[in-house]
Image 1 (tube, rainbow, N blue to C red):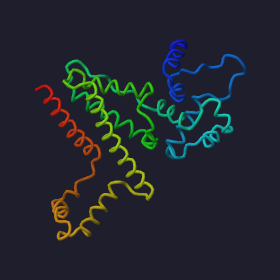
Image 2 (image 1 turned 90 degrees about the horizontal axis):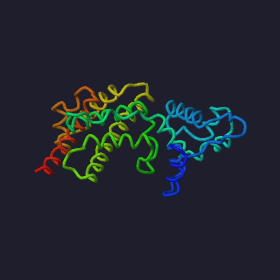
Image 3 (image 1 turned 60 degrees about the vertical axis):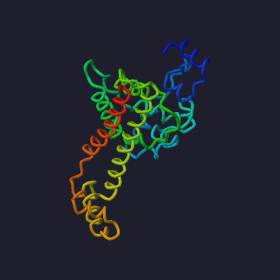
Image 4 (image 1 turned 180 degrees about the vertical axis):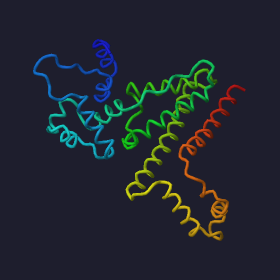
Length: 256
């Protein structure tokens, strides 16, 4: 972004420091000795910690230790851990899928968008450990929103309704990805797999759930509802399809 344009944006509407860094609005020093650190090196070190141990392990002092420097030296480049988190997510986020193609239905485009986001969270599970402090506002986050809106472009929905529906689908994606990540991590901590944990849970339910107290739950167990093989991708696709069924019905009601 040209320096003049960045300055203009900052003057007309104050941009938080973290977003200034993500949008490249900060001027880089042109004089003095070449710095031994850089924002890119700091972000890379923080990402390595998050991917190995989770976001909770990331701190300015821990990242400084990975770079063999002091925490105070990091603050010349990154103002806070919150700013570091924004830069980490911007650096690690995948590019959104291609926008809706000519002739592609809104539903097919929405499914591609949702599946790509679900895969991104699966590849970077620490994403979901970062507290959501504000709506998405970094370049790559907005690129995902733009692609999501492209899927719904041309429907009878208002612009506000499109954004609300993207938020609905995003919430489902985040929940499913978070649940899968937590189950996988918990199982790994005990040296087991999710499939083993679910099999053991099914057996426990058969033992604990009695028909006189939980008749409907017992009926589901006896019908084998808890005996089906664990298929997280299938579970995600099923839930997403039901949500999009509702969106489809809503769009049809608008068209009518």
